[in-house]
Image (cartoon, rainbow, N blue to C red; front, side, top):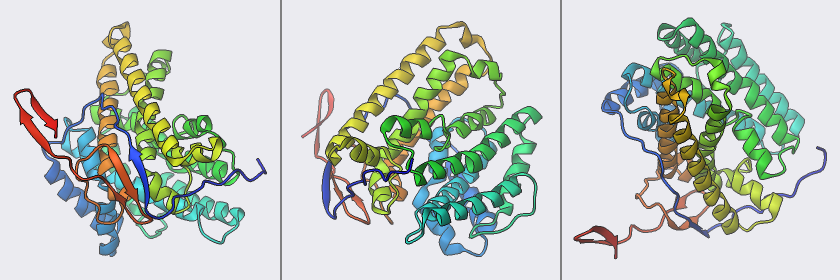
Length: 373
């Protein structure tokens, strides 16, 4: 569309907003070999992904906590495969940041931004097709290393699906998202949700296949396409990216990246910041309840007998739970050096550089357990 949309009002310095409590209907854990996986992952980032860039590698690892997220989501599975996904996750964070920087480059017309993104994604596509790696700030050769490990641990059929999903997210979906945003095609919450979920821009579709890789199964595409499974996946995908939007809006909005449900609601419906936050929190709780209901229905249906299906569907709930908890923790969303104090609700203080969570409330022990005091 050609008309400029209403701009997001932005976030003034020292803004206060109440963070509502979110339901946590699903569980996550921590892999028993987490610290070994973390050390191996950090070594790969320093030596393969960002060789010769120790400061950048340190910042990427500590800002994103990618290995923590993955080890919370896949806490019961083969450590080598989990480490593969840790490596993939950190590369996805760098990829996302690179694209956002190009898409939001200051003082550049949209045509120049689009051309820069297209050139960057073209390099990635060449590497995924087996071409010569052309380095950017990170070593594109590291993708070849990942593919070699996926190849060694996958059936040919699953490998093909995994590489297709990786290619779709990292090039096709990303390119479409950039075009839609630069052309102002995302005008309301429904369009934003379509872009983020079924459009693939949140990498949620990629993680469907990643979960099969972790479990060592290759689900029949006809099963995946069944309405009950598809509707469950749509609900659980919303449980992934919506908490991200709720807890990342400060950092995204202040850097001029308004591809966030909070910003979309403010500019499309004229909501105040508090109204947008409240609306999104309610939506997260609704989508969690819908996903839980749909999983229960599948569990009681003939689909439950399909090998590997229920295990993968349940693991997607672990991913959702890990993602929600990680979103409170991560400096990527809350500012350099951020350490979460464990508080889940209350008044947030927002500055351009950091999110400040409320103080930890006092508690007292009764015969029935802990209560706030």
